[in-house]
Length: 138
Image (cartoon, rainbow, N blue to C red; front, side):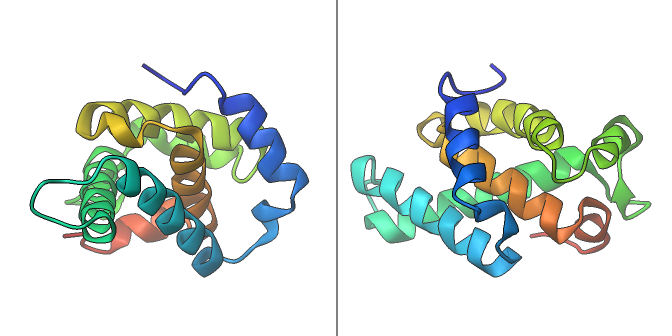
C-alpha cells in the first residue's frame, strides 16, 4: 500500500509551515487532532469519536512498535536501521512513512491519511527510533 496519494503535497505543506521544527509533544498533539478528525467521521459503535480515535491510535502505535523494534534487544530491528541515516529529512520521513503506511492500512484503513502517517513518522523520528525501542510499549 505504501503512502496515501496526497502524501508528497501534504508533506510539503507541513514542511513549509515549519511543523517539523516543533517539539515531540506538539507533534503528538497534532497527531491526536488528526486522529480525532478521522474519529469524528468514522466513530466506533461502542465509543465516542475521541475515545475511538485514542484507542485506534494506541493500537497503531503498538503495531508500529512491534514492527520496528526488536523486543529482546530493545533496539531498532536491523531491517530498519537504514531509516536512521536520513533522520528528519524529507527522504527519512517518506521512508518511515512508507513502512508506517502499510501498518496503518492493515490495522485501521480509516487512518490511512497523509496527516496521520506523516505526524506519526515525524513524532517517532523526533523522539528517536532507537530510544523508542528501549521502552516497552503496551
